[in-house]
Structure formats: structure tokens, C-alpha cells
Image (tube, rainbow, N blue to C red; front, side, top):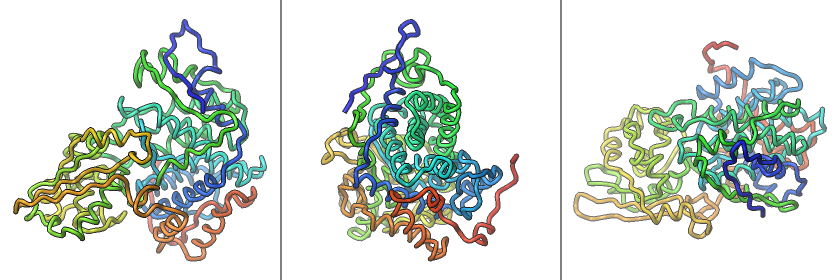
Length: 508
């Protein structure tokens, strides 16, 4: 491994390109390294996972709007749009946009948490869109797509381990633009200098504040990573045409670190794979069994168990209080520590409820289950007994859970918490959980069987059975796919189903 030291440099203290973080990331993208078999299998799992959650969201308003925008930009050869016939092609950056929104809408795909938060699966849509568009022209194959996705995950995870964005209220997609650009660079076999410029442009244009995840959370939450993917495609295109980026983008005295992150005295240690070392970061990421923010996954599983073991805790008349002791992130981002009254509002948006652990824990506790649609309906959120119990749930930061959240020891790493339920009869129910059941160290870790089952479940009633089987056959052959077969890495819904919804007219 390479430890790349990053600090701010004044303009009077020139920093050679080859010493800059963007260059080091570009080198990761341009070194030819074989893909390990278990890494290739996990890439296939995540492409299945993305297709599953995108299929379930095809009729949701943000996805319908993004798809309509993409369709307004037909292009040949172009890329496919999830839900549409693969013969209908659009410009690759717009395919990355529409498909990125579909994947992100339900907050239901993979995650990696460290110094920053991330959904590395957001890289797949832009890499695949470019691959489909240039497949015939550049002779791209499934093996090239595989390598591009592996690079994108590696760069994203390595940045997320080292550099916190949320501490300075910068949204996590600022790591996504560079990782997607790097992945596209690997896919296309670009040189280091070109990928360096693309990474810089992608970072420069994808830094935004975290207001998109604060208070009344809007539909933009699904669009934010799609925007980063679209911008990454455009950044690579400009770089291939010889256009340059602000330099040094990370280390400059007016750069991202100096003014948006830890300031002029900042220092980071970014650990990257060295020449010839395998890119295995995807194996450190994990997907979701439940459609909700990742820190809620383990607590949903705990709530489901408590529902059966202690049915009395589901009744607000029998519960005096529920306290969740958890990490700094869970408390301050999706817990009562956020200070957002919207997290207790039955009329709040789905996106807001998705980021409210008091709401999520209450519903999972009462229902003994979690559903990507039913658990968020206005009727479910406004049920009087739910509101009464919901208002009794608070969170607090526990230093031990914060320490475990940031632990580098996989046996200590935890994203759960300790729940203390005080009953009105004086009894107390105390239980804790470290990781979600679906986590690699959980009670029921996800493997290929679970990813396939998730796809089948979420595509039921959306895709025809023959289309489900066709897609699963194609995607599981990803490493061997030919250029002509890359168009099959999509799903086609019945036209009558998509015709049942329409988007309001816009500019395009």
C-alpha cells in the first residue's frame, strides 16, 4: 500500500502534478491490475443490487422526471435507460443521470462508512453508460466494465476512509465525482495525465453543502449522486479533448481542502494500493436489506426481534421512554441530535422519514418488519399509536459506539447501538446490536443468493418473468460479455406500465 500525504500548498510553493492526490488517484486508475475472482463476484452482486432497487423505483416521481429528461436527449450509439427498451438510446451522460436517480431513489443499495459516508454503487451507472455508448467503437467488453467498476469502488472507498466531508457540511458526493471519473478512465484505458484532469474537474464541479440531507429532505437526495455521475462523464469527455482542471484541486491554497474542509493546516494520509496490488475495496462495502439510511439497518433488525420477544414494547400506553445509545453519526444525522423537528413530523417527506431513526425504529418495532413502500406511506406515518410511541424515542451519543463506528478492527466495527426501553410498570428492556443481519459479520450475511432474491422480490409485478431471467443470466456473465452484449445490462419494463405515469413538461 502507498501512504499519500496530503496538505495545503501555497501558490508560492509549487506542487508537482505527480505529487498531487488527484495524480495518485489517476495512477490507481491507469495501472493494469488483474481483478481477483471474489472481487469480480462482488461486482456482479452490486450490479444485480442496483438493478433491483432501480426496478422498484421506476414509477416514482423523481425517476419518472429523470427518465423524461434523458429521453429528450436521444443519441447514437448512446446508452440504455433502465426500464426502457434497450433499442432506445440516449446520450451517455443523460443515461448516467436517469439511471443514477433510479438506483438512488429508494436509499436501498450499498454503503461504505468511515471518515465519510458513501454509496459506492452510485459509480456503476456512469461507468456502464459510457461503456454501452463506446462498446462497439472501442471494442469494450464486460471485462473492461468490471475493471472500471473495481477502480471506482477503490477510489471512493480510499477517499472515504481518509477525508471527512460531512464534518464541514459538504455532501458526500464530492468523493463520487472523482471516483466515477477514475472508473471511466480505467474503462477506456486512458493515460494518467488525462484521468488526472478529469478527476480535478469532477471534484471541482461536485462540491455542494449537506443541506440536501438536513431538515425537510427533498427529492434532490436521489438526484445528487446522479448529478455527480453525469458531471464525471462530462469531465472525462473534456479531459479527453485536452481541457484542463484547476490545479492543485485538493492541495491549492484556494482549493477544496483549504476552504471547504479542514483548512490551510490540514493534513491527511490517503492509503492507496501500490503498483500491481489488487483493488479489493469493494469487499469492504455492504448492501442494505432494508430501504432506509444505513445506520438504521441494524436497529431495524433489532426492532424486528423486540417485536416478537417483547410485544408489550409496541404499545405506547405501556412504554415510558425509548433511548437509543449510538454513534455520533447516527445521533447527529438521523437521530434526535440533528435538532430537526421534521424527524418527528408525520407529514414529513419520505426522504425525511428515511433519515429519522426515531420513526424507523418505531415502525419496525410495531410491525416487526420493514417495507420500502408500506413503511413510509402517509397513513402509516400518521397512525395515532405510532405517533405516540415515536415521540417517546430519543437518541444519544455513546463514546463507545462512536469509537466502534470508526474502528479499523473488523471485529469491533459497529453501526448499531444499545436500546433501553423503560416500561410504565417499572421494568426495563435492554438490547443491543452491532451490525445489521445482512452485514458480512451479521446474522445472515448477503451472498449471491440473497442479491438474486432481492432482485426477484423487487421486480415482482414490475418486470415480466422472462425479463427477470434474461437479466440475471446476462449480468452473471458480466466478466465474459462481448461488446454487443453490454446493452443487455439493463432491465425493460412493459411499456404499458411506464405509460401509466407521466412527468410534467419541462424545458427539454
